[in-house]
Image (cartoon, rainbow, N blue to C red):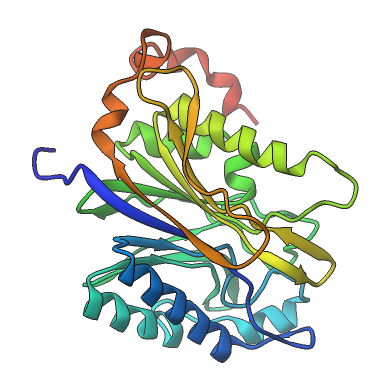
Length: 287
């Protein structure tokens, strides 16, 4: 633990993939990912986070279209990003469709200067829109100079508090929310939901959460952006937004975080982990 850097600069990107009509254009989208990554490099970022399915859009495509847009990891797109990561000593996470044999995953590769450090596959796909997805079944811990990092994708983090908690119990103090959460047409409080749930996840797990969301119209949904970095507030029983939230346009929010702040929680939330009683939680895993 003594060798872990306590200061890290994270950039989160409001992002809109390139579409030709309704068809995703991966080549041009990848160029945009490169441009935003280079802007983040110029602003001193160590880690850059893009949204869920940033490479293809989240537009509810049928299984045959998803298969056509998919790639293995490692593959062509991750190789392009890896060259940038290697050249500029930066770490990049972005959403894409991963192909493993005949299975397709809603995935996030985490790429660093030495290559792909891990791949997270969405464990809780949204069944109404991700009919092509095979659910993931693990929570890979990404080892970085700033300690282990966890990744969850969208629904994983808002409605399944077990996901960030699993990472936090294994030592993560940074968690990535790689998301494509839209302005739902039948709800007026989608933004309150977004901030409230991420704030709660950060406090209950003593985590900084870097959230990157889509913007623009894709398929049947409009995405509201508001990418941000949120975490516990030193000495307080509340959360604080350290970067952003951005609005509804493309852009970057960036913050330098001091991970040692996470040791300055007040009594009410300081002993969350040691006060847990896992032997009473059997109902969480009963069928």
